[in-house]
Image (cartoon, rainbow, N blue to C red; front, side):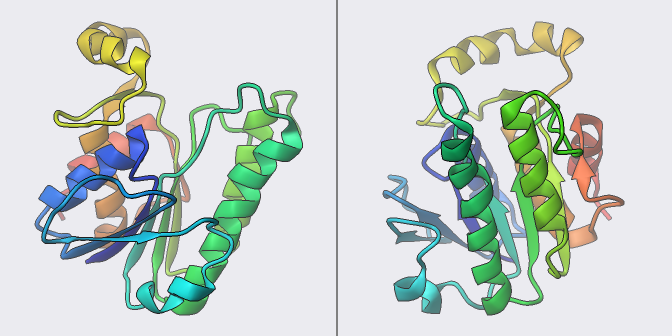
Length: 218
């Protein structure tokens, strides 16, 4: 498969990117980001853009792909709802609509988060906004749309872009995983690849669903 990936300069996207580069099911990856990811690989091409909502100059490089793995995102800490909405709702929806026009047979796989609010009515701002984004993406007529909701995540060996606290998570992952169900970023990447290969039974996948999808072989 040929994959468009966003967020390759962040922790989650980098982990998924590494899985894509190693996975034999993936033929080609184009990383779309605001700065180079700092990696070189025969499968990898990079497209640097200032704004995911303005792709006019690079659209010719984004057609002919089977999947988009949307891993870009940011914490809501310190942001007003309007600011967070631009990043978490407006931007992925604009990007998805552009790709839908260029690749109508594409599967769109979106990294969301545990405890996202599908009702869009709850008191937690980030959960409402993510829920709104999930619901809007599910309405788009891609071949398939899947929202993955990871929780505790373990970085992959060789990652450069790891948030400080996650090195501690990596060391304590076996213990923490007994209390908080978690996944490795390799598992997340395999689940995204398998969502394209096999599909999934529903559009919103929690941690047990992600782990089961990652383990599928047929």
